[in-house]
Image (tube, rainbow, N blue to C red):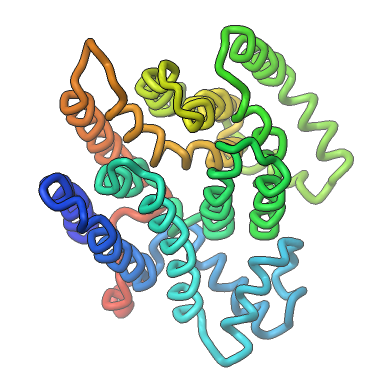
Length: 348
């Protein structure tokens, strides 16, 4: 666990540094990005899907594009780009995590009002852990972040083009096609009420809808008998609920980014509710939830008469740290404790 504690502590150390020396923001992001990249790339059997993606890489290297049996061409081509020159799975992890870290940290550097806080949330709210388990989906989510400036400007064609590019790594990214429009709508009682009503209807009709879907696409039938099809506790809804409530100050801002960010937290909450029916549906919420890396720092620093920015930042840090400790206790994503390549001789 020591690598995670050191990394989280380094994230927090950015607060006094950047408060005194804001011109160091890119230097801080470079150092933290390198640390995250190396830690993720040097892991060994860390993450539930580590062996799965290792086998997929070897199958693609041996048999070509059809080796893994996937239809997401982007991820297959990334495997081939490493395998064809003779690279192995370790080299692939270095390339993969470099791409993901570069996308996330440059996005934070461009748009976050508090880079150290965004990095701290990346670590504690489990997006870093996610990147070491759900490889295809985490890279798709990182690509989706590129749509943010287009969503702010209500330029839907380039935003949808980015969504299609992300879907080349994980097809669930296609859920962002309708969300591109919904995230740009002004928040209102009518907007949120209709969205909540639609989510409620889908929640109670979920099983017949899924049965109809797998009848049309039988290859997904096996999900209905796996452990991830079970419902999860409402305890896991507390995080998205807290993120949405914390982001409410953004409703009172005139900045055009505000609807995108607060709407992202709202739809993340609605989508996360579905894990209480079937845990695997949590994956649909990842794309909008990723925007919390910007929404929560924006909300912490937003003008508010009742509570100072300093107090809200302290509350956010404390809440994120508590969630991090909870994730560690539950073994989220199979990344706790950390095992590096130096543990290979003693890891079964």
